[in-house]
Image 1 (cartoon, rainbow, N blue to C red):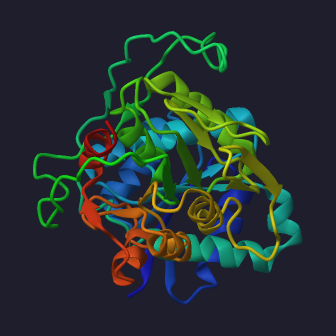
Image 2 (cartoon, one colour):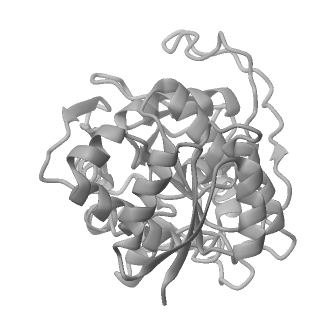
Length: 378
């Protein structure tokens, strides 16, 4: 089936180039274009595209506002274009909170110099997110998350992220019929003295991680490592956002960081994160032979070697199968593996790989994972 795409951007050059790239793929049809957010809403309602590509900064109505309206009126998978800057990261994370499925860097030079690479990446993204659950799982109006009560940070962490005011980002709420109503959930977990919780995710992960981690109390007893497929320019901004929203502390991991309870370390984009037996984090250069930087398999594998059966690994929404081989090593060592259920995933790829390989000890809906982490570890 041909995937129908609406291209939204105030730049005539960018609209044309994106339309040309997509139209060259026989599986994709550009059914319309729009120059601002208001036109995007009108076109989405009239054309009912399968996917929308969306710019952020546009006249009359910006992309984030448009995404919110589209998610309320005709939920459609949206691919955002973003600049690779700290501000671009902040804006993109806002767009994901508003309901966008995924994002790509907006780099005019790449479009000019590497047309084949750009074409392949863009078309793959469009085809993948067209199969996402964004249409199936309808969304209600975004509601702000209540800010957690401030908790003094331990002296070893300092005041990371504490100088900025807490501004909870809106999180799309699942509509009345629970997203995982059609997916049988595993029983509540048994408590165990885990030395590490490791969470891996990709497409849909920023919002999923936010929803899981905001359920954890400040005294959560296990150290946490997070592996989210994300560019280097984005992970620091994402860690700062999570730190403001969560009761636990969250920071972008640095070489030499020490794991401790109540702290989540986010793998830096473009690099690899490993854990040694002393609880120290090693940050290594991204290997060009690996598709993912950071890679869930690498971090899971190092945790299996260092912590044996004392790891609780969770695989959330995402394309592909990253995390499966690392989970296999963890499973062989006696550790526990959880997977997000299909109905609550934006993209049921990574968790599906875990389930199909029969590595999952439990399968939970997204909104149950945080509370089950508390039950398992406290």
